[in-house]
Image 1 (spheres, rainbow, N blue to C red):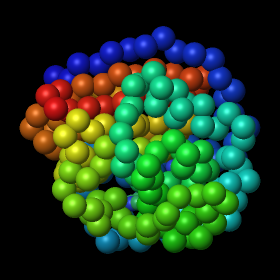
Image 2 (cartoon, helix red, strand yellow; image 1 turned 90 degrees about the horizontal axis):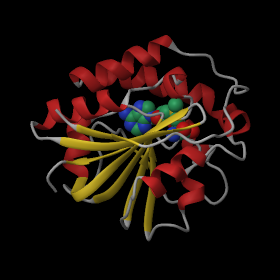
Image 3 (cartoon, rainbow, N blue to C red; image 1 turned 30 degrees about the vertical axis):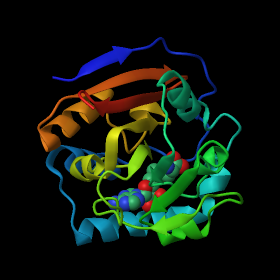
Image 4 (tube, rainbow, N blue to C red; image 1 turned 180 degrees about the horizontal axis):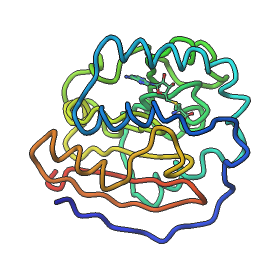
Length: 217
Ligand SMILES: C[S@@+](CC[C@H](N)C(=O)[O-])C[C@H]1O[C@@H](n2cnc3c(N)ncnc32)[C@H](O)[C@@H]1O
């Protein structure tokens, strides 16, 4: 059973005015992917089609000044270090854009070309790829950022370097359509890999975050 350290929550501006309502189908897919590794071409088409359709409004409905406070807090209080960083499921890069100056090598990947084609100015290099099978060598990533994104646990483990970490953020906490608790993230990684994982977790306003590492680097 993974060890989870809970840090005090801090205040923040909530995202309650944002346009999206909870999408129960995406929650269902989130749990299928994390718990069973379920993913196939028909799911990929379903998810890509949904996010292609949301892409034109994504930035306008989400890019507010405090949007990245939870992610930045996770990087600071989660003691995240590293040089080679991927945000997977980066959407229109409203978060990745704010990390470009912070890392030597930052990439943003997404399944939806619609999302990437609406990427904001200042986005890092973009990759259109499926997170279930990333075009990366084993052990490449120091940091893998998954914000409101599915957890492909076995692929995460394959791509993470020794000592690397996953940064998991849900912008609206449990109200986020694509949400897993910290406990569920750790459990999914442990089931997929057969080794122990540990996490530090906290909240910023309604958002939740977790930084998750292998228990033994
Ligand atoms: C809820 S959006 C979050 C976007 C961004 N992280 C944000 O918080 O603004 C989920 C994103 O994950 C992408 N996505 C879903 N499944 C994926 C997969 N298998 N591989 C890569 N990206 C995927 C979607 O296309 C979408 O852009």
